[in-house]
Image (cartoon, rainbow, N blue to C red; front, side, top):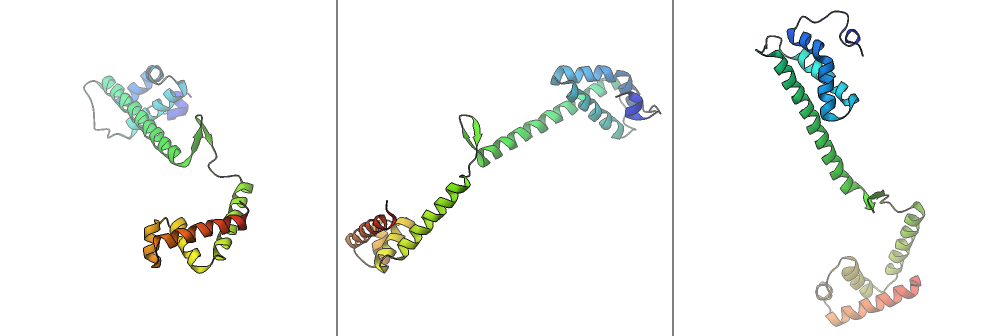
Length: 181
């Protein structure tokens, strides 16, 4: 992009902008040498121009070239920090939202046919549990579905631990026969 296309036909009267325009090719090389990409170097040169053009014009420096290069370094560091934050944020999200296998992303969701089959098996299990006798059903639900120990299940039901064990064993046998597994 030419200087005229970038800044219009009028040249700026700001001394820092004039120095920027004179040294723009050097600034682009300065950026390119540090970031390793001519395209990113051009972007950084644009950002530098915006910083210089939007600063308070009353602010001057004894060494304007040094000031421009200092601002250029800050622009480059700001971009690097932003990219580092972006990479960290994306990496954290990827750990939470993606499963990996051998370093490759894999879909965490089961295929649609497997999901339907799983829901059908779950529905069959729920229906089979509902057909169990009430005490057996309650013991099974408390122990297997709510995760209570045999002792806690016995206490909740007001029966002995041995009775809970018998109810759960009978429930598992009945469900195995009913569901064919």
